[in-house]
Amino acid sequence: MTSLKNGKSSGENGAENPIAWRIAQMQERVRSAKEQDLYLYLQPAEEVDGAHVVINGRRMLQFASYAYLDLLGHPKIQAAAHAAMEEFGTGTHGVRVLAGTTKLHVELERTIAQFKQAEEAMALSSGYVANLGTIAALLGRNDVVISDKLNHASIVDGCLLARAKFVRFEHNDMEALERALGDAPKRAGKLVVVDAVFSMDGDVINLPDVIRLCRKYNAMLMVDEAHSLGVLGETGHGILQHFGIEDQDSIDIKMGTLSKTIPAIGGYIAGKSDLITYLKHSTRAFVFSAALPPPVAAAAKASFEVIEAEPERVRTLRSNVNYFINGLQERGFNTLKSETPIVPIIAGDDERAWMMAKLSQDQDIFVLPIVSPAVPVGTSRIRANVTAGHNLKEIEHAMNVFEQAGKAVGVLPS
Image (cartoon, rainbow, N blue to C red):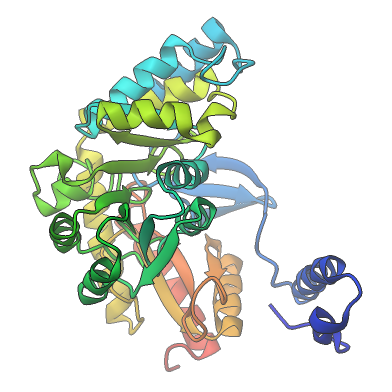
């Protein structure tokens, strides 16, 4: 978006009310973007139909959703949600440790544990609070938490909330990770936290080396599989399957979401029974948050069952990802090191990213720009998400639209 006008940027240092100044700054940025018809966020969908979405009466190809396996609207999942609502209603009127646990929550956690080959699991109200609450519950002031620099904001916030020593290492740099582990006090509790698939770049963590280093330095390992569940591995079981690692205990804390591949809402933690028992009684985000609505819990459980029963969805996704990335690269786009459905189309500066997204939406391809400071200056991009719900004709059409937009704004030679 454009910068502030009329010298307001000096208010950060001189304004009497810095809070009011920050609110005014955001208001100005949003207003300016709307005036230029470049405010593309928070557009309400009127209809969602597989790989299509209707916005402002226009039917558009959806390339901004996390519906990696195209499970939204699946008959089995819909039926499970309806049955749960008939039996339990729309909510629980309670937190899990008091009145909020139903048999559906227990069944969901058992299903997650089985899917992730863990002893037990716990379901929380969102992926954000799963990371935030778990990291904060595990660490104390004398501990050290070590995080990849491109980890999700929920991980960063959990590290800050924990009040442990917070160390960040260069993205996917194993030498930097080893230095951080080597510098940590030997008697300190050490936790390494990494994304499996990085949400802005679409690349995959070097898990085998991360495991090796955690074992060498006696550190616990937590892996966020928000974008790898249903995506990585031959049958979508995640990053351990992707690398062919049979030792399921090589990841101590398995985190994931119920709102990306899984068409529901929530987050989960899976691991050893003693870990889950501890977290269920110590994680404030679990203890003090209302339980997932029963229809949501039932839908999430059914989704895992569908992934197991329909592995062809994972194969279709993998084929579409390869076709999409190869096609974009052949057209001259920089897609970084993505090998997943999250495909960054690098535009460079913020303005080009905004204009590419706007031109694409004008051609009924729904994508959104990711600009600084969410990504480093000079790497602003369209983040395009391909799914199993797209067919090759639709992917080809989208790539042609992106190519036209890229040429129009100077990302590609015209």
